[in-house]
Image (tube, rainbow, N blue to C red; front, side, top):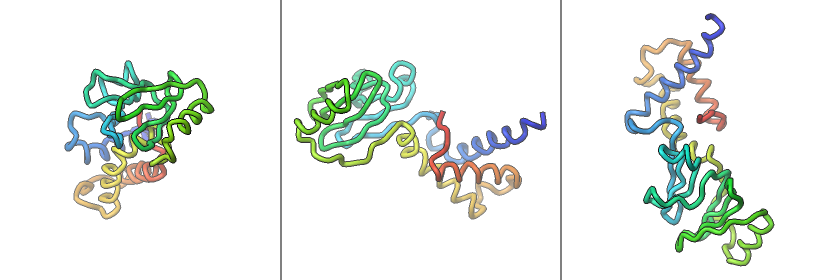
Length: 178
């Protein structure tokens, strides 16, 4: 049992860190997140979509999934461009038409043909989506820990050390979101 102690301490630290922010989001799990695209669509990694669609690009209405199982994406003026299980894609955020391409060369040709210009944001992955949603909330708890804020009064030093380790991982973008 002694060998499990550091693992249990880390799990307890993650849970304690999460519990300091979750009351605002009582129905959401820490693995779930959702962000709005510039055109008002959603990139979702939430139940009930995860099982069937993974990280997906969808309308605000749940029944309209445009792209499932996304690997990465980036925003262009009036478009979301990326790669998913089905291939490279362009979603026109105005018409909601989706075009799929077999290769990155075909995708780049379509971007040029449609005169989308330069991306308006860097390429993102599902990990970036998770960090965009949960990172600021977790980092606020980390700031409270560093100043020994009221959330952490009475927490033993070993647990605080484990939480600090989790905070360092969050800062580096290394937290496993699953």
